[in-house]
Length: 249
Image (cartoon, rainbow, N blue to C red; front, side):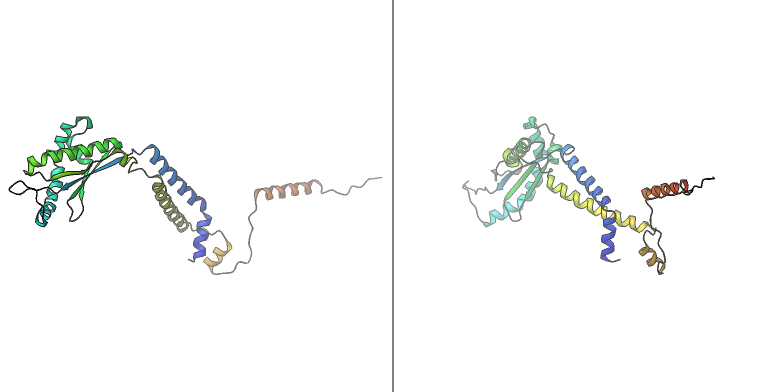
């Protein structure tokens, strides 16, 4: 099948393509504006950098930095444990979440070979997300000396509600673009499927191609208005058959 035939197939059922794309885009818009609950994110950063020598004087060297980097993996597990999150739920009851719910809305990450740990919390408002992540950071900092017997966690930056004023799960332009592409692909596939299942012959070219024989005559399609005019003309002729009248004298 040549490219012209593909284009002809698509043009023949272009209304199906428009319908699929329109339904997909309208559905995405309705879901985006009426059925999507906006989710906000807020982030805070912690740094593992404070150690003391035997005399209580702060010291920092390459060995200390490597040690801090290695313990970050342990800290990432500790911050998501019930020992921290249950404490957050008890200390900040206004958050309205249990320790398990806090764990589901909390994400902890760190860059390779970095002493900085990022906390990200999700909430139904930017204020709620910022308050949640700041609460976890503060409780974690206060509990690490109790759990690890070392005070080496510092809050590098707290979350601010203004930093996450836009929801992370609502992006109308991207959603409409994805819906348009998906709807277009489905429509094209559906059109070619219909063409594959349709084994009727609609033009003389298709008939010649199928039978490998030339067409000797073609019966054109008669439209309803043409058929009605033909019938009216036939009736008129029948009524006026006796056009010549003789008078008997």
